[in-house]
Length: 404
Image 1 (cartoon, helix red, strand yellow):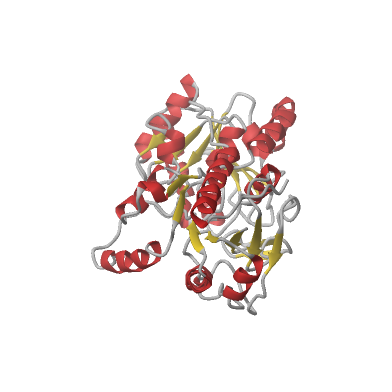
Image 2: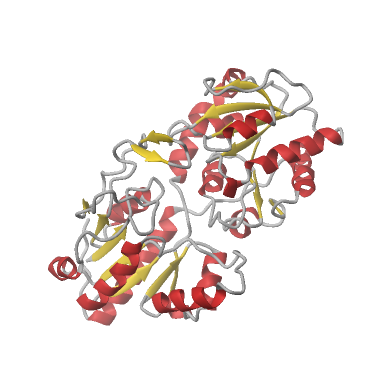
């Protein structure tokens, strides 16, 4: 079988595990290191405790491994193996162990465990070749990742920039399998379709005028996502007398919340316990919808006219863009984001932190409409995983068995 090691039940990964189980060509089991997000868990960047409002534990085989006390997927050293995996790998009959990157210590430990158990190592990470590296750091990164990549047999790349990173480390064509980052497109499309007849009502609830061009920022209010760039672009447009009907909609929460509110004319705030300045017509009008869970966020996608993701290079992909596109919402994406090349292209992307270019592209989308790229589907990844598994079976002399 295929053993899949991951930090916790992640809302974006679970649909892939469910689709793989439904397909039935690959016997597998997901091994979780923590239960973060299943039970109410604290998220430092969101600034609140929450659990996902979708079922993340049914429809596929899984188990929780023994965890170390205080284990959390947010810290490299705190997310370590609570047991050696080689015995479990041998007992399960696993042919391969698949890890989801290298951001926690457990994944590095798992590489050695797989070697000791004599099973293949598979990898699907998020990093890309866009991140500028200081000169002093480049040799260290090349040494560390070079050690890891030499011990990986098959690589699943999520997009063009991710693939280029692997190629720069000498990963061969034969080792590479496309597994594009995707969300449950059908769920988001269905949620949006059900809400679309209520679009006018949603906008009224959030204080968005019927004739407004509503631009959505959806995510954590943290520095790496640069939400203040959207406010700056709105002020730039105001100074130039353009898009007088612009309205900003913020769905999310985080440390930059107070600064965002001070920089806008807040007409609605779901988190009214946070103080903000009184009405200031000289600032861009904005509504703050608060943190929105998986079944709630479609309200923002339907209410808005365009999504903007202004993040910097630490945004390794940007799955909010997949969600928005699946919901029928045009997007503008910073070229520093991992998804920009594959999902936005030249028309839908802008130079990171170039406020004037972002402002100009907002004007274009408002007047001409935005381009709707077709987001990749989970079925593409399932096909690649099945192909990799069949390749492994052929090499190992094992006859594949259907599980469904």
